[in-house]
Image (cartoon, rainbow, N blue to C red):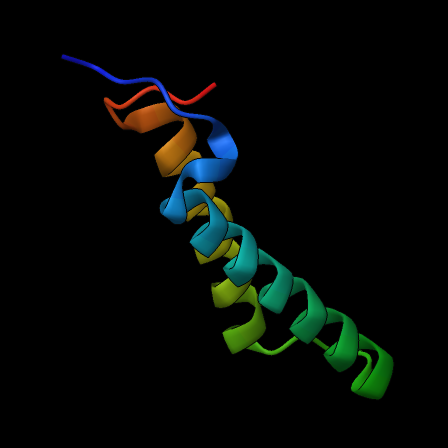
Length: 64
């Protein structure tokens, strides 16, 4: 039996959103401070986006 749930009820989506926000904030802070990007900020940003994409498009439990 598959139970639908709202997108905002997914912990994995929220984890990805938080990782993405942290990555964006790191990039903005680095850009404003030194004008260059750190590899760590880019990795966190990409990981957050991939986490959200994984949950939204590649898991079996549907979200609304």
